[in-house]
Length: 423
Image 1 (cartoon, helix red, strand yellow):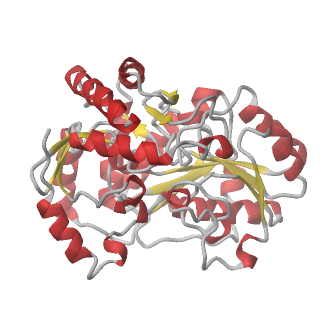
Image 2 (tube, rainbow, N blue to C red):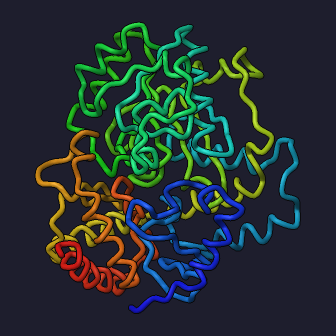
């Protein structure tokens, strides 16, 4: 595919005059892969088109939520019916109840739910709740774990902070991270020791923001046992894994029960939404039942709950996770057949290929990847009509909309990109 990006270049020039860095989220600038951003015009199924008319097979999936592909008909139909009825009421709706019931049906451990407008807000609420419920202040987090742009958790954070080389952000006061203890991901003894006197540990059950890094056998169950021993709460950040790695998320896939779990991405059907939920006795500490204040004007927004409910209903269809697993396996096979010299970490329909020899099990091994080579690899893929994550430290996502033909096209592009990156 020969791509012209003249219109994208023009828009980026204008954007830099009105938006900070020309973008509204840093990693979108594509600096880490050595090029200027493409401006997307529309999306459908497994594809996105830029403003210059170039089509790409999309593996970014809006950073994860497009599990059914872009603009799935059931979601669009539901939104078209809901839109004339209003966009925000600031009052309870039946759709909130239906949505929460659908989440609980899939994840019975979510005995009570509180909706927010983003995954970051869900994490903020979960942390405040954990501190209120335990009467403790310290939060344990993993090095390289990203849980939103929250001051107290931007200590050694992954995702865009790692991409930009600023894992501890300027502007975060020392006091904001004073009650944050850092431990390596997959290091159970370190986590167990750090939990003494802590309110909670927050962890991505499958790390997705240092690239995909899987929990080692016994890691999550070990965290559960350590929390039980110390009285700390286990918070699973399932903003990426929730409804992605299984209908019941990582809790179902790994057989571990969180005290509080945080959700986002998929549950909004592409609209801004988040939620946190868990044990009824812990959740009841939230206002109006308890003293811990948490609120949001757009929480439970009628359009977001409409879109999310349509997605959750679609994901309840028998066989859908078999399709996602098969798609992820096919993408991994395409990487291997193309001879891309990477270490592949995959679970279900999400994966990362790291340009590094040997296993990737934590932040240190993830960040040893050759990011210069990944940049060349990603640029070559874009030139061949494949849209990868614009950072080594993010996940590739397969949707139910990706076809065998899409994966064949991807396989050919991967082979060419492997050659280009080697040069």
